[in-house]
Length: 78
Image (cartoon, rainbow, N blue to C red; front, side, top):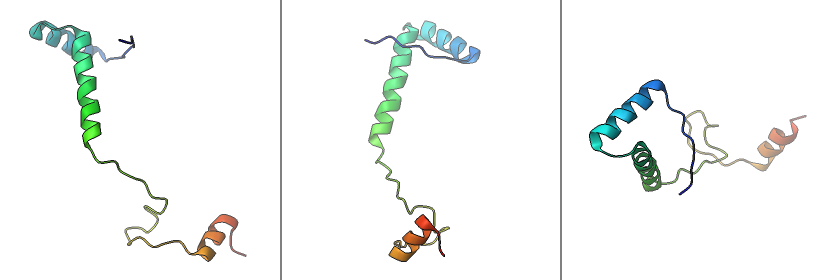
């Protein structure tokens, strides 16, 4: 295992202490379980790929960049 530090608010720390006593488990064990749940949930979600063109259409369907439009964006139109 690797040791790490976690900063909690006063309320979170108090709630964690109460839960540990109620469950008869250590605070560290509860934190590890929480971390594992977050990781497992994130791994189940499909990966969201971000497109360079995403969002530039103002809600319009995706349209490929034209070579002239790319040139104008990169170097400015004359």
